[in-house]
Image (cartoon, rainbow, N blue to C red; front, side, top):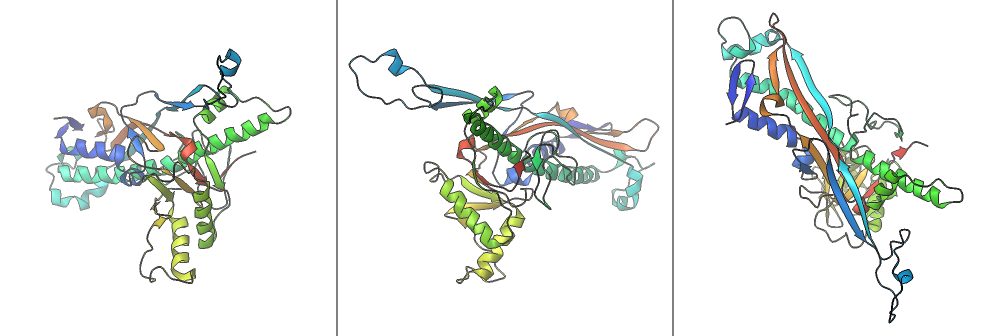
Length: 369
């Protein structure tokens, strides 16, 4: 059975299994079944896309090469190949502490001799680790939606809203692009394509071409919500802009934060001529038969609508990587002559959209001019 070494104490199976689950899946987004996780990705995972253009033309006894020539602009008579990538980025969880600071709470463990971490009961060790992991889980969940590689540069944040790539309760969300940053990158490439089509426009870069070849995110609206009626109007706008061939999927979900849901829930309960539920009750979280999933960490006034699941057909994928078992979590004395101990975890992670063309988004966040 695999083990983790805690400062000279070999602790088997149960803790290791617990830590791996919390590292990879212990966040609200995963628990709600909204993201497909690809484990064991050390450098890059390629997501290839293939799209078929139009293939029907007039019947002729002998077609010529001109009639069969592929047209990259219209997509006529060709397969269009593109790639999206999951590039896990490094970051670290690190905390130093002195076990003596918590001595009065650990009397039930009855350690013998000097108070040192290795003499404490495994239950105490596990409690300390869980406190750390709970905060780490919150951080990962926030980064899945609000991460921005390199920080907030290039994105305009609405007033009183979470800064993409900015600080969170656990640390800066700057190590990889989250779902909204990926959406904005796609919209930026769309704007570049529109500008390139104009007179004297700058041609698209290969990166921009590849981004759009995998599909174009649909932006349903870009205003902030102030009332529940605003939310309802946005849901209708999103539904109307959803491609007809996508609508029947049972895995389509609306994903929003608590700020948006609370506005909508109050509106359904108090503002409608016909009340759906009484005030003490919670309204059913559906719209047009599709589930509404409320997730802590989704940016303010933002709604995602797409195929969100834990399966491979999910529009949202996450890549993760681990070191060896003994390196996954280090719990050791800071140095030989010190009472201080430290927790350390080294992680690699990335998030990307798999089929942007099947995703409809409402958000007031924009790319900076």
